[in-house]
Every structure is written in structure tokens, then in C-alpha cells.
Image (tube, rainbow, N blue to C red):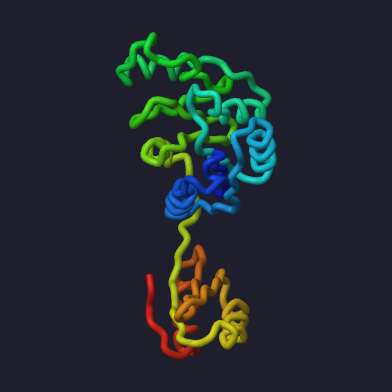
Length: 232
């Protein structure tokens, strides 16, 4: 399974808010064997949201969208998702019933538009806040508040699964440029994905769905680089 993550918000693009949601989602999806192949941030504009979702729906098994939920003037994500899917936005009886029966809110206390979702969407209930999320046609819409987003994702995480990805990291005390020949040979010898990340030393990440292949590749590299140690 592969997917894309779309984060919505002018505050993210202005640098006023750190995009922790994308990092958290990527890590949790990775743990479930799902490959995240795109992370994109878009402004609070219906056209931008719809255009990116349309593009990614055609390419990936699922699209996760966070941010821009609620009844205020700049909460436009549901409209953007609805536009991408060719749906109208309407009050969700499912969302409204949960908010009043389980959420403990009186209907008259809810701001107008709180329960509005794209027509036909499955409501994703917000156990931590108010604004519901939605799931429809492989698009999952989650809140932008991290605690709300995390709780909502955990309620639907069984929708996301894939082949377990195994990883080992070898740390080499050599310049990255000096390792190029051995990294090329490593990739030729083993069916693994290799990434190198320089710093005070070079961290070489070795990944594959085959745990034994990863272990063999890591052992091969350890025997051929200077000053190595295991790393998480």
C-alpha cells in the first residue's frame, strides 16, 4: 500500500506552525508497512486542496489530509475534498448524531457547519475535539490539531497496512564520498534500498521487505567500512 499526505494551512506555509502532523503520520504509516511517497502542504484555498487531492487520488492507494476542519471562514478542507470528488457538502446525520449522543453536545450549541461533510462520506468521530473527519473514495480527512489528528488516525489505522519494512543502520567513520564504490556494490549485490546521511559520521540506512536480506547486506557493509557501529 502506498499513500500521500496532504497538510492544509496558511500557518504552515508561513512558518508559524511546525508541521509535526506530517512527521507523525509518516512514522505511523511506515510502522504499518505503508509507503508514503508524497508529503505536500497547501494553503487554505479550495482550488489548491482539490487539485492536489485529485492528482494524488490517481496515483496512490490512499490520501490523508490534515487541517482546515471546522465551521470558521478559513476551514475549507471539506469543501476542497468535496470539489475533488465531485460531491456537494451537506450536514452528516451520522456525525451530528455522534456529536449529540456520544460527544455530549446540545445541537443548538454546535456552530453551523460543524457536521458538514462531503456527501456520502463516512464520518470519523473526534474523540478529543469537536470537528469530525471524513473518509470517502480513498481520501481520509483528519483534524489539524495534533492530539485530535492522532486519536482519529488510531481509530482508523486498520485501514492502512502493507508489507513490513525492515531496516538496519550502519555508521561509518569515513567521508561519504569515499563510500560511493561500496554503496554501489552493495546495491548491486543485494535487493535493498540504501540511503546515506552524512554528519559527524555517515549513517547508511539499509531497507527491504526481506529481513534476512537486510541483515546480510548490513553484515556485508560492516566488513567493508572503517570504524562502524550499529545504530537504531
